[in-house]
Structure formats: C-alpha cells, structure tokens
Amino acid sequence: MATASKLLLTDLISGVNHVPSKYIRPISDRPNLADVQVSSEGSIPLIDLQDLNGPNHSDIIEQIAQACQNDGFFQVKNHGVPEEMIDNMLSIAREFFRLPESERMKMYSDDPSKTTRLSTSFNVKTEKTANWRDFLRLHCYPLEDYVHEWPTYPPSFREKVSEYCTSVRGLVLKLLEAISESLDLQKDYIVKASGKQAQHMALNYYPPCPEPDLTYGLPGHTDGNLITILLPDDVPGLQVLRKGKWVAVNPIPNTFIVNIGDQMQVISNDRYKSVLHRAVVNCNKERISIPTFYCPSPDALIGPAKELISHDQPAMYRSFTYAEFYGKFWDRGLAKECCLDLFKQN
Ligand SMILES: O=C(O)CCC(=O)C(=O)O
Image 1 (cartoon, rainbow, N blue to C red):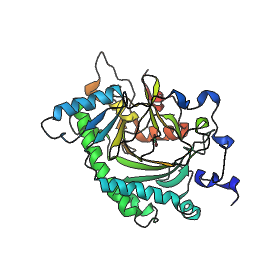
Image 2: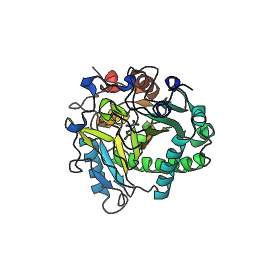
Image 3: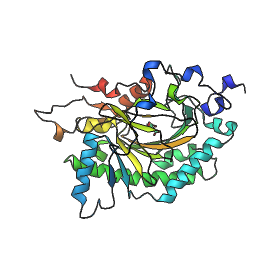
Image 4: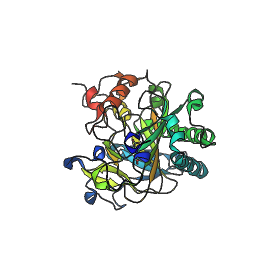
C-alpha cells in the first residue's frame, strides 16, 4: 500500500521526519510545551483507598469530595486491581499495536457508533486537523454482549482484557458509591441514575512524533461520560488544566488517574467539575494509555440530582438521555467548549 493511502498513523509515519500537514495545528492552538508546569508539587491529589472501608472512611470521602470539587482529577493507590492484571493489560495493548498492519486493519472502522473498532485521531469523518493517535475502542459491559467482537490477536487478548475490565468495574462501583456519599446522596444514587450502565475502553497508542510542538495526541477536551479510570504506561503525556495552566501528570506505577466526566458534573449540579485535559506527544518514545469510560446506558435520563437543587443553586441543566448527549459529543469533535453547554438551562 502506498503511504498516502495508509489509514492508521502507525503505518503512515514509518520513516517520516516531519509532521504531515494534516496534523499541524494553527500557531494559536499548539501545545506550547515550554509553558507547562512539570513539578509534582501542585499536581493532582493522590488518594489511598486502602482504608475506604476502615476507620478513616469519612476522611477518605472528604478527600474525594475536595478532589472532585477543586481538581476534577485525582490518582488512586491501593485500588484493588491486581498489579499483574495491570501489567498484562499494558503488555496486550503494546502487542496489539505491533501486529502486522493487515491483522490490525481487520478491526478498522471510522464509524463511531460501532461497539468495537480500531481508528485514528478522534473522529476522522468530522475533524479538520488530525491527532497523533491510533486507538482501539471496545465496549465492555456487559462483557458477554461484546467480547465476541474483540480482536483474536494477540491470542490472550479476550481473556486478559476481560479480567482487567471486570476488575476495573469493581473499582468504579466502589468510587461511585464513595462519590454519591461525598455529595450526601444515597450510596447507590449514581449507579441507579445510570440505568443499566455501560463501560467503554480505549487502548490509545501515541507513536513517537518528530515535531511534538506542532500537534497533539489529543487536544484539550472533557470526557463526556460519568467517570474515567485512566491506566497510563510509564511515559508522561497527560496534562490537566489547573487554574488556567497546563500541568503535566507524571505516571506513578500501579496507580490509576481518575477524572470526573460531564455526566457527573450534571448529576452534581455543577458541584463537581469535568476538567479539560489533553495528551501531548514526544520525539523518542511511544506511549500507551488505557482509559476506562464508565457511562450511563443510552436510555438513562440524566439531570441534576433533586437533592442538590435549591433556591440558591437552581438546576443548571435540563434533563436529557445519555443517547442524545453521546450523539452530539462525537459529532462535535474535541472542541474546547464543553459539550455540556448545549444542555445548560437558561
Ligand atoms: O492519553 C491520555 O493520557 C489521555 C487520554 C484521554 O484523555 C482520552 O482518551 O480521552
């Protein structure tokens, strides 16, 4: 296949010394990497979940409340997902993106409504500038509805990824209870508000980039779902907007990065923040990140919890089905303005 007809970034760029023009951002919209805060001080909070069900329960709930309110992001350790599962997940992702092009391309689709697909950038059908990323997107709850669609190579893909998804779902459910409690809602409030629930996952692959100042792995965006549990590899690349400045989040082994998504912002009636974040690339190293996006089911009716609406804090959003939101989210592309603005109550 001639280079020009390659659909995936991985295959397009072998031997390329410059960023192809379709990946180059206008000058006003570049990562400005020299102006990023890199020290761990002032980075996002790290919460130890060891004692979530112990004597320090209320202290941990308070830490979660503060992080959701002030940062929209936190890291968790002692989260209950075994280290071996995490290592297996990262290895499988690495192996998948090293498969021959012909094997990978069996999974390719540019249709965001497909429940299993390999694609590139964000939404190639609607975007003007491409992003320096390939990704495999999987739906993974309920597992038995989707696992038969997943790749069969590497041979242990389905087994290892299923184990990982199930374990991460356990962590999500724990966090959703804790977050409900931190909002003074019934423990099962958020899960119930999410209907039958859904779990999606992306295996993001960012190849080394010859000119990382000109492009993004993913530009600044908020997540449209309820909550995201990100598994990073050991290569930095995630940056979070804090007090108007981009802050690099340096990965800590065996630690997940958790962030509040748009649906949580709505349910909390703007008490908790879905915060802009982005992925930047670098010259030397490939990078893998694996976000789990936990979502309401398409028919779930989302709106601010009535317990959080008052005279002083009226409902900030109208109610909508998650299906309505999700359609708009993918159609707009990763715009800086949050998709939630379309659902704001006048
Ligand atoms: O690669 C990362 O660290 C961030 C990924 C992300 O924001 C996304 O997949 O939506």
